[in-house]
Image (cartoon, rainbow, N blue to C red; front, side, top):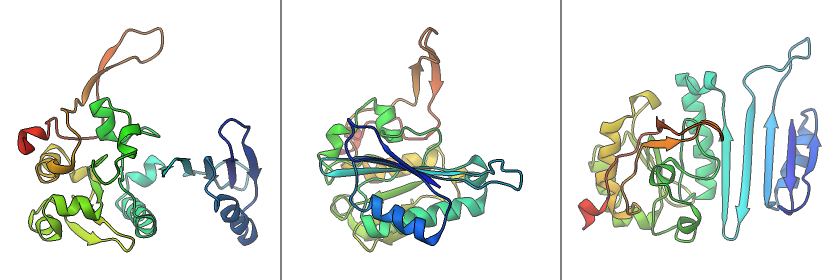
Length: 241
């Protein structure tokens, strides 16, 4: 396993690579315990010939004034398996129980800093980080909703009665765990619209666009692409006024 820790984003990272052992794991946790400006951790295994096995596992974090972004990437082989999906949810749930996140995004080809909703709105997350209790940064297959926002959309009773979720559960550190469908593949435009109508009071204003012009490479002409993560292409002001 290896990790790179930035105590200051303007300095070179302190890289540290070790073969796994209980001692090296505890040392890694010690190094990360002070929440550095940025850090990344990657774990890999090797076969008998020394070749890298799949899957590998990567976690990175970036912290700023009053926030921490935690990002993890997993192999397609894990993500595409029902057992892998449940393991992913269990891992995110364990973090959410301790950290009380203000937003969660499970994505395909996701941004390291912006949620799928922010990408579809062509918005920077900077402003939303300053208002964590006011604007929900993302919704989707898995949504985490803070207690204040939950009250603004009608409370736990309305979340459960809406029929929009297969799991509506409180988190130990505060907030609500909301899972829209049992599996990733079951989540689509119909579910996104149901969530949109329920969560409209806490969504950022504006109409998301999931079809956008993108440049495949610097010298190439722009092409229309469809973003892979589903959000409703509707402005919440059509409901909230």
